[in-house]
Amino acid sequence: MARALVLAALVLVSGWIGYFFGYNAGHASLPAPVPVAEAVHETSRARTIEPSAVPAVGRTPESTTALGDPHLSLPLRDLKASDILDTFDQSRGGGERRHEATDIMATRGTPIYAVDDGTIKKLFLSKPGGITIYQYDPGEHYVYYYAHLDRYAEGLHEGQIVNRGDLIGYVGSTGNADPNAPHLHFAILQLSPSREWWHDTTPINPYPYLMAALGRK
Image (cartoon, rainbow, N blue to C red):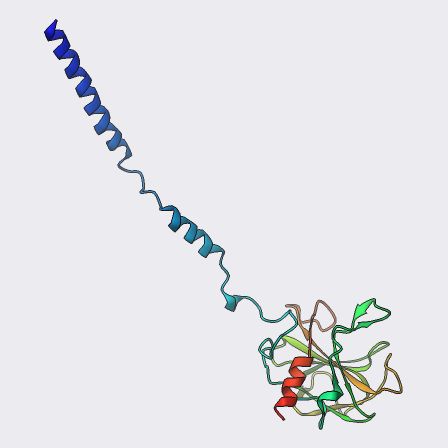
């Protein structure tokens, strides 16, 4: 009887020993688990967008750092702050649309100058804008839009390379502007990858850029 009990005990002990070594041998090749804190960190890092990768344009700028070239010059000479109206968010067309431009009041025939280097992309006559100019910046990321002109500068043509400060036209009231209130309608538009001046552009408020230019005079 005692011998049988001893044999049973030996069998039980050898079974536990075999199970223990077999379990560890079978799991020796499994990778060590990643701590939870590290796994969360890796996931968060994979979804993080660096600030430098987010375009600064496509929003109404709060400062002059949103444009590729922050130092635009004034399109008219001898301006005062009261001549530049922040009309970007004003409604037009009976409330059907937003103005999305800055109006600069001036006498008819006041010379208009290019605010940046670039190319005269389009000279266009439209019912709302009258005599207009679409000028691209050197990198063709933005278009500067001048509207309600009285006339173009002599010899101005599409494809012409202009420099900041070059004469390009004269203030008027063509299009749907009030004949008794000649002014320059000035807009800045961010171009889409298609680089089309008439399609899929994003308006940027010119007012802070013009005021910054006024402060540099």
